Image (cartoon, rainbow, N blue to C red):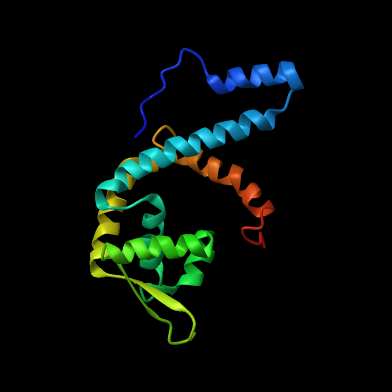
Length: 169
């Protein structure tokens, strides 16, 4: 986890004031800056929890995805699609999980060019332990109650729809 800044003022509110004086009021600037800072804080906290398991949050997400799949395995292309990351990132993530013994890879019998990634028993043990720890720290969102977490999800959903993450239908 990163060291608290402990500043005597809110640097984003200050930046917003200065921005407004210089370029006029643009509420989206303060919003995006707050979102980006929140992402830094949360990723730091979550990575600190999963690091003792030899994971990053990206690797943890891949293990969770494999855990949720019916057979405990998915094509690499499906992993990238579901995690919304580039194929190169999926390959890197899965290869590191393979090296750690948490995932195995094999040719996809349904696609001669494709590869299946499957979670190992060790991977299942690690993802269960890491998940317990992440739940215990509320995934870094302990400053919010359940209703507020729901509001955050709802507030960011239109942004994800506009980006084409999924069809609203």
